[in-house]
Image (cartoon, rainbow, N blue to C red; front, side):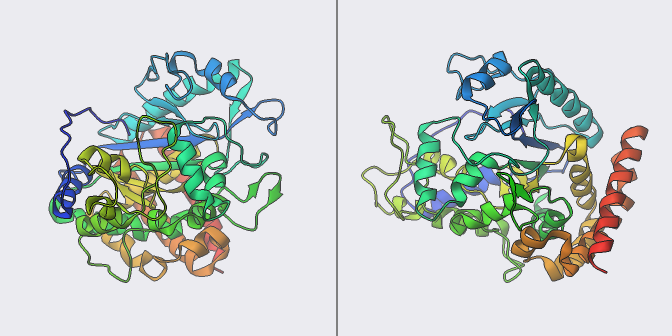
Length: 411
Protein backbone atom coordinates (compact mmCIF):
# COMPACT_ATOMS: atom_id res chain seq x y z
CA UNK A 1 0.00 0.00 0.00
CA UNK A 2 1.56 3.30 -1.06
CA UNK A 3 1.64 5.83 1.77
CA UNK A 4 2.54 9.48 1.89
CA UNK A 5 6.24 10.23 2.46
CA UNK A 6 7.13 11.74 5.81
CA UNK A 7 10.10 13.80 6.94
CA UNK A 8 12.56 11.35 8.46
CA UNK A 9 14.87 12.11 11.35
CA UNK A 10 17.58 9.55 12.02
CA UNK A 11 18.64 9.08 15.63
CA UNK A 12 21.31 6.85 17.16
CA UNK A 13 19.78 4.10 19.29
CA UNK A 14 21.75 3.55 22.46
CA UNK A 15 19.17 1.59 24.44
CA UNK A 16 16.31 -0.82 23.83
CA UNK A 17 13.72 1.52 25.35
CA UNK A 18 14.38 4.08 22.61
CA UNK A 19 14.03 1.36 19.96
CA UNK A 20 10.75 0.20 21.49
CA UNK A 21 9.38 3.74 21.51
CA UNK A 22 10.33 4.21 17.86
CA UNK A 23 8.70 0.94 16.84
CA UNK A 24 5.50 1.93 18.60
CA UNK A 25 5.41 5.23 16.71
CA UNK A 26 6.09 3.94 13.21
CA UNK A 27 4.47 0.48 13.23
CA UNK A 28 1.13 1.11 14.94
CA UNK A 29 -0.46 4.34 13.73
CA UNK A 30 -3.90 4.30 15.25
CA UNK A 31 -7.06 6.11 14.26
CA UNK A 32 -10.42 5.38 12.65
CA UNK A 33 -10.16 2.38 10.29
CA UNK A 34 -10.82 4.09 6.96
CA UNK A 35 -8.22 3.09 4.36
CA UNK A 36 -7.62 -0.23 2.64
CA UNK A 37 -4.92 -1.26 0.16
CA UNK A 38 -3.65 -4.35 -1.59
CA UNK A 39 -0.30 -5.59 -2.84
CA UNK A 40 -0.64 -8.09 -5.67
CA UNK A 41 2.30 -10.23 -6.72
CA UNK A 42 2.55 -12.62 -9.65
CA UNK A 43 5.09 -14.87 -11.27
CA UNK A 44 5.60 -13.81 -14.91
CA UNK A 45 5.67 -16.23 -17.84
CA UNK A 46 6.26 -16.39 -21.54
CA UNK A 47 2.81 -16.54 -23.12
CA UNK A 48 3.78 -19.34 -25.53
CA UNK A 49 5.94 -21.39 -23.16
CA UNK A 50 5.30 -20.78 -19.44
CA UNK A 51 8.31 -22.91 -18.47
CA UNK A 52 10.72 -20.66 -20.40
CA UNK A 53 12.83 -18.38 -18.18
CA UNK A 54 12.05 -14.66 -18.34
CA UNK A 55 15.17 -12.55 -17.89
CA UNK A 56 15.72 -9.14 -16.38
CA UNK A 57 16.12 -7.29 -19.68
CA UNK A 58 12.85 -8.62 -21.06
CA UNK A 59 11.02 -7.44 -17.94
CA UNK A 60 12.72 -4.05 -18.07
CA UNK A 61 11.74 -3.56 -21.70
CA UNK A 62 8.15 -4.62 -21.00
CA UNK A 63 7.67 -2.33 -18.01
CA UNK A 64 9.37 0.66 -19.61
CA UNK A 65 9.01 3.85 -17.57
CA UNK A 66 7.27 1.86 -14.82
CA UNK A 67 10.37 -0.28 -14.21
CA UNK A 68 11.67 -0.07 -10.65
CA UNK A 69 15.22 1.15 -10.16
CA UNK A 70 16.28 -2.39 -9.22
CA UNK A 71 15.77 -3.22 -12.91
CA UNK A 72 16.94 0.10 -14.37
CA UNK A 73 18.70 2.66 -12.20
CA UNK A 74 17.80 5.40 -14.71
CA UNK A 75 14.06 4.61 -14.68
CA UNK A 76 11.61 7.28 -13.47
CA UNK A 77 9.67 4.39 -11.86
CA UNK A 78 6.38 6.04 -12.70
CA UNK A 79 3.27 4.67 -10.97
CA UNK A 80 0.54 3.12 -13.04
CA UNK A 81 -2.35 5.34 -14.10
CA UNK A 82 -4.34 4.91 -10.88
CA UNK A 83 -1.39 5.27 -8.52
CA UNK A 84 -0.03 1.75 -8.01
CA UNK A 85 3.73 1.41 -7.85
CA UNK A 86 5.45 -1.47 -9.65
CA UNK A 87 8.26 -3.51 -8.14
CA UNK A 88 10.06 -6.64 -9.30
CA UNK A 89 11.03 -9.32 -6.79
CA UNK A 90 14.26 -11.36 -6.90
CA UNK A 91 12.81 -14.17 -9.02
CA UNK A 92 11.26 -11.78 -11.54
CA UNK A 93 7.85 -11.70 -9.85
CA UNK A 94 6.02 -8.45 -10.57
CA UNK A 95 4.12 -6.69 -7.80
CA UNK A 96 1.75 -3.74 -7.77
CA UNK A 97 1.24 -1.84 -4.52
CA UNK A 98 -1.87 0.28 -4.55
CA UNK A 99 -2.53 3.69 -3.18
CA UNK A 100 -4.82 3.30 -0.13
CA UNK A 101 -8.50 4.02 -0.76
CA UNK A 102 -11.31 5.05 1.59
CA UNK A 103 -13.66 2.35 0.28
CA UNK A 104 -13.24 -1.22 -0.90
CA UNK A 105 -15.29 -0.40 -4.01
CA UNK A 106 -12.93 2.44 -4.98
CA UNK A 107 -9.92 0.22 -4.27
CA UNK A 108 -11.24 -2.56 -6.51
CA UNK A 109 -12.01 -0.22 -9.41
CA UNK A 110 -8.61 1.48 -9.30
CA UNK A 111 -6.71 -1.77 -8.84
CA UNK A 112 -8.54 -3.50 -11.68
CA UNK A 113 -7.56 -0.63 -13.97
CA UNK A 114 -3.90 -0.76 -12.90
CA UNK A 115 -3.76 -4.55 -13.27
CA UNK A 116 -5.23 -4.22 -16.76
CA UNK A 117 -2.58 -1.62 -17.63
CA UNK A 118 0.20 -3.86 -16.30
CA UNK A 119 -1.17 -6.88 -18.17
CA UNK A 120 -1.24 -4.89 -21.41
CA UNK A 121 2.39 -3.82 -20.97
CA UNK A 122 3.44 -7.42 -20.43
CA UNK A 123 1.27 -8.73 -23.27
CA UNK A 124 3.06 -6.50 -25.78
CA UNK A 125 6.25 -8.29 -24.77
CA UNK A 126 4.64 -11.75 -25.04
CA UNK A 127 4.36 -12.13 -21.27
CA UNK A 128 1.49 -13.08 -18.96
CA UNK A 129 0.85 -12.97 -15.23
CA UNK A 130 0.85 -16.24 -13.29
CA UNK A 131 -2.25 -17.65 -11.66
CA UNK A 132 -0.99 -19.32 -8.48
CA UNK A 133 1.03 -18.73 -5.34
CA UNK A 134 4.13 -20.54 -6.59
CA UNK A 135 5.70 -21.05 -10.00
CA UNK A 136 4.13 -24.27 -11.35
CA UNK A 137 6.75 -24.79 -14.06
CA UNK A 138 10.21 -23.43 -13.22
CA UNK A 139 12.78 -24.18 -10.54
CA UNK A 140 13.95 -21.25 -8.37
CA UNK A 141 16.37 -18.99 -10.27
CA UNK A 142 17.51 -15.42 -9.55
CA UNK A 143 16.48 -12.71 -11.99
CA UNK A 144 17.18 -9.51 -10.03
CA UNK A 145 20.38 -9.25 -8.00
CA UNK A 146 20.97 -6.51 -5.41
CA UNK A 147 23.10 -6.31 -2.28
CA UNK A 148 19.95 -6.90 -0.22
CA UNK A 149 18.92 -9.97 -2.20
CA UNK A 150 22.42 -11.48 -2.13
CA UNK A 151 22.58 -11.07 1.65
CA UNK A 152 19.12 -12.61 2.04
CA UNK A 153 20.10 -15.61 -0.04
CA UNK A 154 23.30 -16.12 1.94
CA UNK A 155 21.51 -15.99 5.29
CA UNK A 156 18.60 -18.17 4.15
CA UNK A 157 20.97 -20.76 2.67
CA UNK A 158 22.31 -21.45 6.16
CA UNK A 159 18.98 -23.14 6.97
CA UNK A 160 18.23 -24.91 3.67
CA UNK A 161 16.50 -24.34 0.32
CA UNK A 162 13.23 -22.78 1.54
CA UNK A 163 14.61 -19.26 1.35
CA UNK A 164 15.51 -19.57 -2.33
CA UNK A 165 12.10 -21.05 -3.10
CA UNK A 166 10.42 -18.13 -1.36
CA UNK A 167 12.61 -15.51 -3.03
CA UNK A 168 12.51 -16.83 -6.58
CA UNK A 169 9.29 -18.82 -6.97
CA UNK A 170 6.48 -17.55 -4.73
CA UNK A 171 3.78 -14.95 -5.27
CA UNK A 172 1.49 -13.59 -2.60
CA UNK A 173 -1.52 -11.37 -2.04
CA UNK A 174 -1.33 -8.83 0.76
CA UNK A 175 -4.28 -6.95 2.20
CA UNK A 176 -3.47 -3.72 4.05
CA UNK A 177 -5.87 -2.56 6.76
CA UNK A 178 -5.82 0.40 9.11
CA UNK A 179 -4.77 -0.54 12.64
CA UNK A 180 -7.87 1.11 14.11
CA UNK A 181 -8.46 3.17 17.24
CA UNK A 182 -6.21 2.47 20.24
CA UNK A 183 -9.03 0.74 22.11
CA UNK A 184 -9.66 -1.71 19.26
CA UNK A 185 -6.06 -2.30 18.15
CA UNK A 186 -5.56 -5.50 20.17
CA UNK A 187 -8.80 -7.02 18.85
CA UNK A 188 -8.07 -6.16 15.21
CA UNK A 189 -4.52 -7.50 15.60
CA UNK A 190 -5.81 -10.76 17.09
CA UNK A 191 -8.56 -11.12 14.48
CA UNK A 192 -6.19 -10.66 11.55
CA UNK A 193 -3.99 -13.44 12.95
CA UNK A 194 -6.67 -15.85 14.14
CA UNK A 195 -8.53 -16.07 10.83
CA UNK A 196 -5.22 -16.71 9.04
CA UNK A 197 -5.04 -20.53 9.04
CA UNK A 198 -8.61 -21.09 7.77
CA UNK A 199 -8.19 -18.40 5.11
CA UNK A 200 -4.84 -19.87 4.03
CA UNK A 201 -6.70 -23.16 3.56
CA UNK A 202 -9.65 -21.57 1.77
CA UNK A 203 -7.51 -19.60 -0.70
CA UNK A 204 -4.57 -21.97 -1.26
CA UNK A 205 -3.47 -22.00 -4.92
CA UNK A 206 0.09 -23.31 -4.70
CA UNK A 207 0.07 -27.10 -4.92
CA UNK A 208 2.33 -27.45 -8.00
CA UNK A 209 5.92 -26.25 -8.28
CA UNK A 210 8.64 -26.79 -10.88
CA UNK A 211 6.51 -29.25 -12.85
CA UNK A 212 5.35 -31.51 -10.05
CA UNK A 213 2.84 -31.93 -7.27
CA UNK A 214 4.35 -30.75 -4.01
CA UNK A 215 2.13 -32.54 -1.49
CA UNK A 216 1.18 -29.15 -0.01
CA UNK A 217 -2.01 -27.19 -0.56
CA UNK A 218 0.15 -24.06 -0.33
CA UNK A 219 3.79 -24.75 -1.12
CA UNK A 220 4.21 -20.99 -0.93
CA UNK A 221 3.28 -20.99 2.76
CA UNK A 222 5.40 -24.10 3.24
CA UNK A 223 8.41 -22.14 1.97
CA UNK A 224 7.74 -19.32 4.44
CA UNK A 225 7.36 -21.84 7.27
CA UNK A 226 10.72 -23.35 6.33
CA UNK A 227 12.63 -20.09 6.72
CA UNK A 228 14.07 -18.90 10.04
CA UNK A 229 11.07 -18.77 12.42
CA UNK A 230 12.65 -15.83 14.23
CA UNK A 231 11.55 -13.68 11.28
CA UNK A 232 8.58 -15.57 9.80
CA UNK A 233 6.55 -17.05 12.69
CA UNK A 234 3.34 -15.24 13.72
CA UNK A 235 3.78 -12.47 16.26
CA UNK A 236 0.41 -13.10 17.91
CA UNK A 237 0.10 -16.46 19.65
CA UNK A 238 -2.90 -18.28 21.17
CA UNK A 239 -0.56 -19.08 24.06
CA UNK A 240 -0.39 -15.33 24.83
CA UNK A 241 -3.70 -14.10 23.43
CA UNK A 242 -3.92 -10.93 25.52
CA UNK A 243 -0.37 -9.67 24.94
CA UNK A 244 -0.11 -6.04 23.93
CA UNK A 245 0.58 -5.89 20.15
CA UNK A 246 3.22 -3.18 20.47
CA UNK A 247 5.08 -5.09 23.18
CA UNK A 248 4.85 -8.36 21.25
CA UNK A 249 6.15 -6.75 18.04
CA UNK A 250 8.96 -4.97 19.88
CA UNK A 251 10.12 -8.22 21.46
CA UNK A 252 9.91 -10.00 18.09
CA UNK A 253 11.78 -7.31 16.16
CA UNK A 254 14.62 -6.85 18.63
CA UNK A 255 15.13 -10.61 19.01
CA UNK A 256 15.29 -11.28 15.26
CA UNK A 257 18.77 -11.79 13.74
CA UNK A 258 20.00 -9.25 11.22
CA UNK A 259 19.36 -10.22 7.60
CA UNK A 260 21.23 -7.36 5.93
CA UNK A 261 23.92 -4.99 7.20
CA UNK A 262 24.03 -2.01 4.86
CA UNK A 263 27.25 -0.25 3.94
CA UNK A 264 29.01 1.11 0.86
CA UNK A 265 30.34 -2.26 -0.30
CA UNK A 266 28.44 -4.91 -2.27
CA UNK A 267 28.34 -7.58 0.47
CA UNK A 268 25.66 -6.82 3.04
CA UNK A 269 25.74 -10.26 4.67
CA UNK A 270 25.74 -9.81 8.47
CA UNK A 271 27.73 -11.87 10.95
CA UNK A 272 25.66 -14.94 11.90
CA UNK A 273 23.25 -14.77 14.80
CA UNK A 274 23.52 -11.10 15.77
CA UNK A 275 20.11 -9.72 16.71
CA UNK A 276 19.07 -6.10 16.62
CA UNK A 277 19.12 -6.12 20.43
CA UNK A 278 22.74 -7.33 20.26
CA UNK A 279 23.54 -4.45 17.91
CA UNK A 280 22.09 -1.95 20.40
CA UNK A 281 24.24 -3.59 23.08
CA UNK A 282 27.43 -2.96 21.08
CA UNK A 283 27.92 -6.17 19.06
CA UNK A 284 28.99 -4.23 15.95
CA UNK A 285 31.53 -1.43 15.51
CA UNK A 286 29.00 1.38 15.10
CA UNK A 287 25.69 1.82 16.96
CA UNK A 288 22.41 1.39 15.07
CA UNK A 289 20.12 4.25 14.15
CA UNK A 290 16.39 4.56 13.81
CA UNK A 291 16.90 4.23 10.04
CA UNK A 292 18.69 0.91 10.64
CA UNK A 293 15.78 -0.24 12.80
CA UNK A 294 13.23 0.65 10.11
CA UNK A 295 15.27 -1.24 7.53
CA UNK A 296 15.57 -4.22 9.88
CA UNK A 297 11.81 -4.52 10.33
CA UNK A 298 11.47 -4.51 6.52
CA UNK A 299 13.39 -7.81 6.60
CA UNK A 300 10.92 -9.46 8.99
CA UNK A 301 8.16 -11.47 7.32
CA UNK A 302 5.51 -12.66 9.79
CA UNK A 303 2.01 -13.52 8.51
CA UNK A 304 0.76 -10.15 9.79
CA UNK A 305 3.26 -7.29 9.84
CA UNK A 306 2.61 -3.85 11.36
CA UNK A 307 3.73 -1.05 9.05
CA UNK A 308 1.69 1.78 10.49
CA UNK A 309 -1.21 -0.29 9.18
CA UNK A 310 -1.72 -4.07 9.38
CA UNK A 311 -0.20 -5.85 6.39
CA UNK A 312 -1.85 -9.28 6.08
CA UNK A 313 0.74 -11.41 4.25
CA UNK A 314 -0.46 -15.01 4.44
CA UNK A 315 -2.54 -15.39 1.28
CA UNK A 316 -1.47 -17.03 -1.98
CA UNK A 317 -1.74 -15.10 -5.24
CA UNK A 318 -5.11 -15.76 -6.87
CA UNK A 319 -5.95 -16.43 -10.54
CA UNK A 320 -7.21 -13.46 -12.56
CA UNK A 321 -9.60 -11.22 -10.61
CA UNK A 322 -9.77 -13.79 -7.80
CA UNK A 323 -7.82 -11.42 -5.52
CA UNK A 324 -11.09 -9.56 -4.92
CA UNK A 325 -12.50 -12.50 -2.94
CA UNK A 326 -10.01 -12.61 -0.03
CA UNK A 327 -9.93 -8.80 -0.02
CA UNK A 328 -13.70 -8.72 0.46
CA UNK A 329 -13.60 -11.52 3.04
CA UNK A 330 -10.93 -9.90 5.20
CA UNK A 331 -12.39 -6.41 5.07
CA UNK A 332 -15.86 -7.82 5.79
CA UNK A 333 -14.64 -9.81 8.79
CA UNK A 334 -12.96 -6.75 10.31
CA UNK A 335 -15.41 -4.02 9.35
CA UNK A 336 -17.37 -4.09 12.63
CA UNK A 337 -16.42 -5.06 16.17
CA UNK A 338 -19.27 -7.57 16.49
CA UNK A 339 -18.34 -9.31 13.23
CA UNK A 340 -14.70 -9.46 14.25
CA UNK A 341 -15.69 -10.90 17.61
CA UNK A 342 -17.70 -13.63 15.88
CA UNK A 343 -14.76 -14.30 13.56
CA UNK A 344 -12.43 -14.78 16.52
CA UNK A 345 -14.85 -17.20 18.16
CA UNK A 346 -15.04 -19.26 14.96
CA UNK A 347 -11.29 -19.25 14.36
CA UNK A 348 -10.10 -19.79 17.94
CA UNK A 349 -9.92 -23.63 17.78
CA UNK A 350 -7.67 -23.52 14.68
CA UNK A 351 -5.81 -20.25 15.22
CA UNK A 352 -2.43 -21.98 15.52
CA UNK A 353 -2.84 -24.49 12.64
CA UNK A 354 -0.61 -22.68 10.13
CA UNK A 355 1.32 -25.81 9.17
CA UNK A 356 -1.84 -27.90 8.70
CA UNK A 357 -3.39 -25.11 6.61
CA UNK A 358 -0.37 -25.07 4.30
CA UNK A 359 -0.10 -28.83 4.14
CA UNK A 360 -3.69 -29.97 3.81
CA UNK A 361 -5.75 -26.88 3.01
CA UNK A 362 -9.47 -27.64 3.08
CA UNK A 363 -8.73 -31.38 3.37
CA UNK A 364 -8.19 -30.69 7.10
CA UNK A 365 -11.70 -31.01 8.64
CA UNK A 366 -11.32 -28.49 11.52
CA UNK A 367 -9.87 -25.88 9.16
CA UNK A 368 -12.55 -26.55 6.56
CA UNK A 369 -15.30 -26.13 9.15
CA UNK A 370 -13.82 -22.85 10.37
CA UNK A 371 -13.34 -21.62 6.82
CA UNK A 372 -16.96 -22.38 5.91
CA UNK A 373 -18.24 -20.49 8.96
CA UNK A 374 -15.96 -17.50 8.29
CA UNK A 375 -17.08 -17.35 4.67
CA UNK A 376 -20.71 -17.38 5.83
CA UNK A 377 -19.88 -14.46 8.12
CA UNK A 378 -18.17 -12.63 5.25
CA UNK A 379 -21.23 -13.11 3.04
CA UNK A 380 -23.36 -11.47 5.74
CA UNK A 381 -20.94 -8.53 5.81
CA UNK A 382 -20.62 -8.21 2.03
CA UNK A 383 -23.55 -5.77 1.51
CA UNK A 384 -21.87 -3.33 3.92
CA UNK A 385 -18.92 -2.94 1.52
CA UNK A 386 -21.19 -1.11 -0.96
CA UNK A 387 -19.66 -2.78 -4.01
CA UNK A 388 -21.10 -2.04 -7.45
CA UNK A 389 -23.91 -4.47 -8.23
CA UNK A 390 -21.95 -6.54 -10.75
CA UNK A 391 -18.88 -6.77 -8.50
CA UNK A 392 -21.03 -7.63 -5.50
CA UNK A 393 -22.80 -10.44 -7.34
CA UNK A 394 -19.60 -11.93 -8.78
CA UNK A 395 -17.85 -11.68 -5.41
CA UNK A 396 -20.78 -13.31 -3.66
CA UNK A 397 -20.75 -16.19 -6.16
CA UNK A 398 -16.99 -16.61 -5.73
CA UNK A 399 -17.20 -16.70 -1.94
CA UNK A 400 -20.06 -19.20 -2.14
CA UNK A 401 -17.94 -21.45 -4.36
CA UNK A 402 -15.14 -21.36 -1.78
CA UNK A 403 -17.67 -21.98 0.96
CA UNK A 404 -18.99 -25.06 -0.89
CA UNK A 405 -15.43 -26.40 -1.20
CA UNK A 406 -14.93 -25.85 2.54
CA UNK A 407 -18.20 -27.63 3.28
CA UNK A 408 -17.04 -30.64 1.29
CA UNK A 409 -13.75 -30.61 3.17
CA UNK A 410 -15.20 -30.93 6.65
CA UNK A 411 -17.73 -33.67 5.90
